Image (cartoon, rainbow, N blue to C red; front, side, top):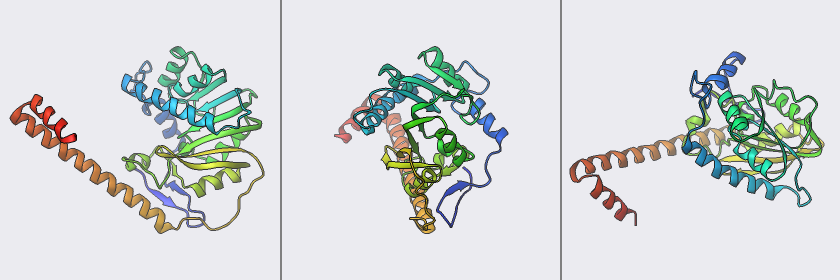
Length: 285
């Protein structure tokens, strides 16, 4: 958990204080997604099963949002993790490149999935003048210490007429684990309004912003900056209430789940696992 503050001028929600660069480097090199000290660690099978399903859903959704004339091209995925979504692009004929800061995941994407994946944070890797028709960054922007510079660097690698696809956590949908979204690695939490402002200030025109799964999705293309100094769309009290409600709902849900688990364990101790399973199955009908 980290302290999040809200800008009264624009409604932007960000961590204060933030991790310094040394902490950021250590987080993604040794801790985030990885087993500390084990560079050979690979994603476990449960994670891979879930990510395969998610990659299929995300790819189908994204392809449906692109104009009919867009067949295949070149794609860069920033924060590609184990590379399953990027593999979907490559299988469909796209020239696919990934960037991933966690060594074990980058290694898996290269050695197991056969992808071109660069090690490191996007802000620090060299793309040697390469440009792409599509840049994908799913749940990455909220990790950027300087989001405006991050988006400007993306602009520098997008072809004319190209597009970017972003997903970020939304303060209005913190899912079942709001404290995870509010934790130290997430340096900001966005609303549709603040995401649109960030894109506009860095030279993008959002063609779609809306919910996707448990996040907020945006598809944008290069265009005239439409940023204005209008007041934020949501008041501070609305944003605070969204966080309070999410945390309260999660606390109740987790409490009920724990109570059900304790009850099941006590029942199993009395009548045995077999009969407990049968009783639970009957109650669920």
